[in-house]
Structure formats: structure tokens, C-alpha cells
Length: 244
Image (cartoon, rainbow, N blue to C red; front, side, top):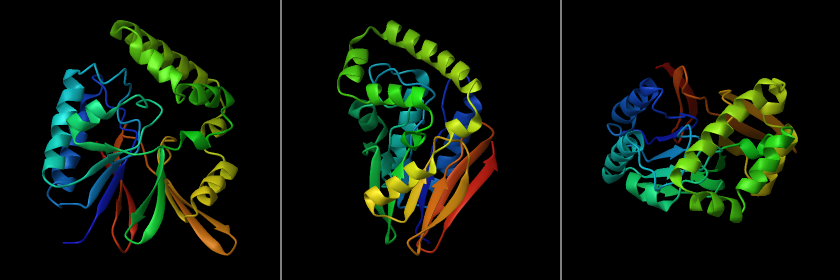
């Protein structure tokens, strides 16, 4: 059997979209488990919102049960935080059989050093968001939020989501995309020529020629209207989208 590693991001799982949850479970049972893949990487924004590991909903419990079964079958699952689920902690990760990784992590992908990340930090033209990101990833902000009552955290999450929708509606599409200089800085920081990320919801494969070297950046798609995933074998990387 051919060795394979899968990457997904931006499922935005929520009670309002049971079709996405069903598509994800089908993906696990049709692609991940039967093929005994080497690993599954989830690159952030797995859930639409995350208010803390102490809140276990029917949805998050069902997702954890499915992922734990995959993990128990011998397939490792790795998770990189996104901008929606950055306060997920070890409690839920253990419940789901996932290993939490740093926001930018270099992995050995069949002999190719590859940096994986959610990607929001490379959208540097969105000044408003980057200010929030810097604050929210600090040591004090998550600690403060998680100390708040659950009902209050849910309210903050709802308000923040509405504010985000209004803010994005007023911004040119280019501002919400990654900036090339930030992309190249990330390649240089990790001294790699291969990158995989999500966040922008623009599935594509981009290449750059720098110092006679080809750099490849693969962007994962969201799951609003499709099941989007990247499958990598020792021979190739293939970005695939299937209808929900």
C-alpha cells in the first residue's frame, strides 16, 4: 500500500452545519482509516468557535470520539491552532487523541522538510486583525478569557464572530490574503522550500523562484461547499476537492 499523509484545515465545524460534520466523518472512514495513512494533520479552524476545553458540546464530543478511534487504530493525528480554536488545550486534544503542535512546525514529509501552519500570521496587511492576534496569543489574554464564566465566553465568541463578519465585509479581498514578503520570510526563517497552510480559503499551489531555488506553497481549502484535502505520498502532493 502506498504511503500517504493527509492535511486538512478550515472545516469550521458547528451545530449549524451538520453536513460538514457528516462529510468529515465520511472522510475519516473512507480515506484515513481504510488506507492506514501515516498521519493526519489538522491545520486550524477545525471548529467554528472554541470557548475552552471545559465546554464539551454534543458536537465536540462526537468529533473527539471519531478522532480517538482513528488514533487508537494507530494513525497519529496532529493539530495546529487556527484563529478560531487557538485556546484549545491538552484536555480536549487528549480526549480526541491528537497531538498539539507549535503554530509553525517543520516536519519531515517523506524526505522534504516542510513548514506547516494555519497561515493567519502571514496576512500582515490586515493590521486590525494582527493587533488582536498579537494580544490573543500572549500569555495573559487566554488565561484571562478561560477564567471567565462559560456563559460570558460564549457571548464574547458570538460578538467577536459578528464583528469579524462586518469587518471582513468592508475590507478589500487582497487585505485578507497572505502577503508575499511574509511568505518568503517564513520560508527563510525555517530554511525550507515547502509550505502547507490554510486560513485564506483559497486552495491553490503557488511557486516562487528565489536564489535559483523553487519554493512551493500549498493552500488548503475550506469545507463550506466541498471536502478539501491535500494528500502527500513519497512521490507527489495532490490537492483534492470533492462535493459535500
